[in-house]
Structure formats: C-alpha cells, structure tokens
Image (tube, rainbow, N blue to C red; front, side, top):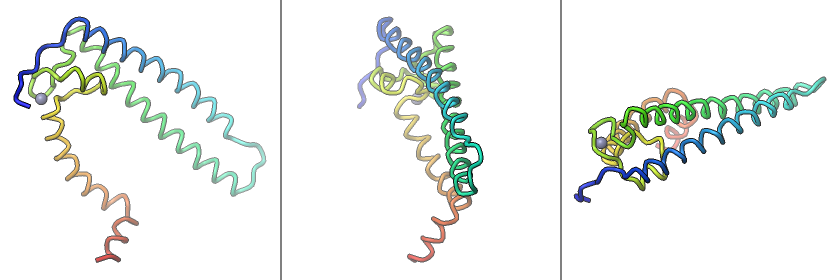
Length: 145
Ligand SMILES: [Zn+2]
C-alpha cells in the first residue's frame, strides 16, 4: 500500500459532490417521515403499558433523528469543503483520501491510515465509557470471571 495516492480528478469530485447532495436530500425526506411517525405514535387514552411502549418508540425515533441531524451536519461540512477546494484531503495529514473510500463514505475526513489510528484511540476510550454507561455488560463480565 505504498503507492502514491493521486489527487482526485474533477470528474471524481463531481461524482462525490452529487453523492453528498443525494444523501442530503434523502435525509430531509427521512426527517419528514420520522416526524410524521412521531405524531402518529402518540395514542389517545392508551393504558400504561402502551404508553411505555410509545415512550420507548419515541425515544428510539428521537435517537434516530439525532443521528440523522449529526449526519446532516457532516454532509454540510463536507459540501463546504468543495468551496474551499479542500474536499478529499485528509484533515489530519493533508494527504488525498482515496476515491474508493470517499465513494463508500463521502463524509470521510481522514485517510485510511489516520482513520485506523484514530479508531485505535476511540476503541480504547470506548471501553472506558462502556463500563460506566452499560452496567449490565460489566456485571456479566464479572459473573464470567
Ligand atoms: Zn491522513
């Protein structure tokens, strides 16, 4: 993998920009759909069990929407890079990100090498977070030990 990564061509950049636009449009559509579901999911005169299921569903939908909002922001950020001619450049080392990688993940900000490094960092901090928020998982580990 020591081969030099070439700059993206105009055509490749165009392809990626279109892809981002498509993703953005599909998110707006999904956002409307989940808002509609959210309203439909509130029943009138439901008993407690139904109510708790509704709460659960709604909090699920909200979490899903938050993720969409987060992703929409990433898309916006990526689209802005086109204006500054920074799209496709790794925000860490400044090298070009491979076209294939961007095609699969147009919001990628890091080249594969930097991404792998940051994932190694993330996975170690995730283990720390997990033991706090997911108490059950920790209990299970304790039982098996
Ligand atoms: Zn990099």
